[in-house]
Image (tube, rainbow, N blue to C red; front, side):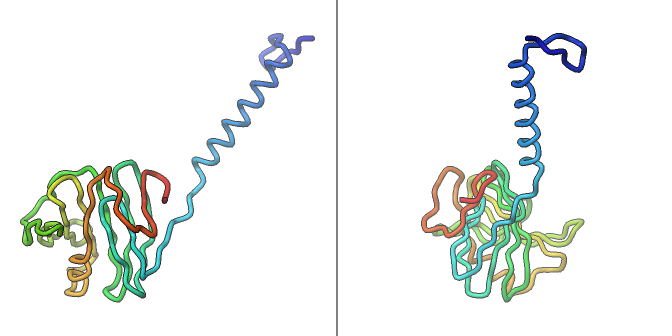
Length: 173
């Protein structure tokens, strides 16, 4: 027996039930997408593999994932040196600025500190598409620059070894 829907049209009950289930499924999907995800966090000693950056965390250091996308991720790195915001990009070009340390023996190139509207930036680059931008509201300290020199980069598509936390796409491994 047909029922009348909200528009006044006659519909088969199975069709109306299927549409109701579809609306429910869409509402659940929208709620899941809109819900904030819990930030992934890792404390040292451990190995963090972000989008391009690899950091061997020392005791007392930690990384908090702030956002991950298809080719990039953003995280906060904290330790005895203070805190740095880091944007790792797995599909980037050479960063702007003067290279003060070239790519050598698997270590990334370091681009000189530069002032931006929001503070200061130091970039590292693997000579291909892997880049990490470290930002600080104040000029970088010696301890922060030394911490940045510990970071290596991997190429998108590679699988870095022995990661305790690896950010890939939208979901932490």
